[in-house]
Image (cartoon, rainbow, N blue to C red; front, side, top):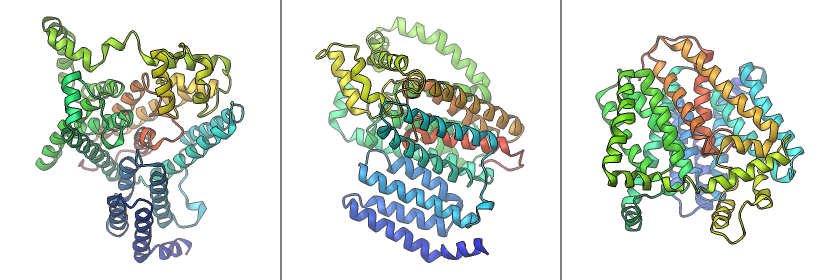
Length: 471
């Protein structure tokens, strides 16, 4: 009765009214961004009224496409709209009977509980509770999003929709990035003169773009390697791989490129081992010979990967600061978001030096994740609790991936499991040089990709083999 009542509340006309009001509000707040309310209105209406299985993939796509560097006011409004869309979908599916709400698997629930409690304790005993409280709230909202996505995954067809959604996101970001680059003579000139450019398109932050492309490129290659796909899908995936590869080079995000090499390497190792061995031989033998015999190629590689900055890298100063902060706050850390406030107390450079100028730039440009290393980031912000969280999420991801692969190793769904594991390996490898992307208190454009992968693995680990065709 309650469930039917809830469904009655959210009738088709209410979906239309909800989407229309949402579009009007955003149009009023951002009069120069008319394409955003049009996308939201059309997408929400179509997914509610037409095919609801596309709703969650659409919302996830919009989280990545519309909540980056579009302004604080717009970002808050869009986030609220998307979260409310997930909540309405949840109520429409499960009604208002709390007893029927799906529960998280015990091991996942314990992990979430540890994150919440440890973050709060670090905030209470940190250096500035008011700053940390904001990050607790953000993490709570993020975990709500994760729960709403998790309960929407009911069969493997929805996993495929998520795969395609992430691939489309990667293609859209890449298309915008490449087209705006080609339309900018200044950026083309910079590339020709300097031999490299760090460009993130409309998202500006190359680390965010790099993380998304790491996942979308891996997923694209995985589906391209699958045997069951149509000719049109095959050509689209070839185009997607080329487009995203070009965009990846333009971002010049070395951490993301390193992570993608790990993820794609694992993908070929599991699915096309002969190609993996051939590629490894070429990399280890042929490439060094070409580099040493051709000085121009070596200089090009040196410029692109900025090898001259290995000895003098701004990251070293931030690593030193993070280590010293952890040394003085080893139990609970400085508290979520408080490292930025303490950075100049541990400044390893002389004021006015060029090193301090770069240090100052990163200090002002980034609100969180300054150490550029996930381990040091968690240690500095949360102390021993941060160390435990690092071990916990790594072990949890490994166990979930192992169980998922065991459950589906003899089915066509295996490729989705392997691709998801590959992305996880890429993100954890990338974390050696990036603080964000795993546990950054719910930073949507950074953390959501890995957590979606974790939810996919949870689905496969908690469900036994299903006989379904792929794609």
